[in-house]
Length: 212
Image (cartoon, helix red, strand yellow):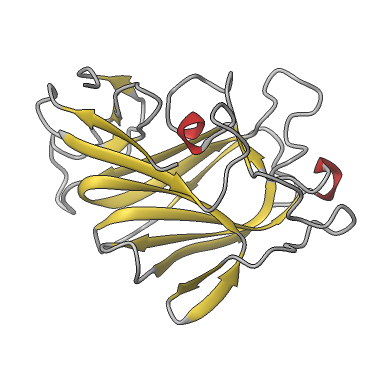
């Protein structure tokens, strides 16, 4: 933590993709698991009990100032080689194919964008107490960012005070004008970033290139 994957053979989207987190449980339940396209067979988990087991409220000391407001909560983020206009983001709950899927989900979160990793702009704030499997949130963002950070403000109180997530994918485009170069990306874990042409609203992913 952090972890960097380099894409070098694609027709666009080449460069370094760096994922990082405020904390992580281990080298296997790490932030890289969110972006390695394993379909939920791996997951990210915070390093210890950081949320209330009765209410799900955050108990730690990590904060991020977003658009002038301080938000408390552990975070994960992805730095892209170039800025994109985010169109949506997808989250897959941890413990896929299990009765416990969703038990450690974030129940409220903030999504922020940045171009320097320091100054953050609010892109979305949501509460999802019934989010148990996967969810996609569509956005209308008119500023391109090269950093995207997800902050877990509260979690499911039934998850023993941990926050876990299986997959996080950001979809976007390089221009506000629909073009073939619009893309979405997720990277890490030695796998290539996920590149998705998005001329209108299609977000069906496919992999191109090889991580080196």
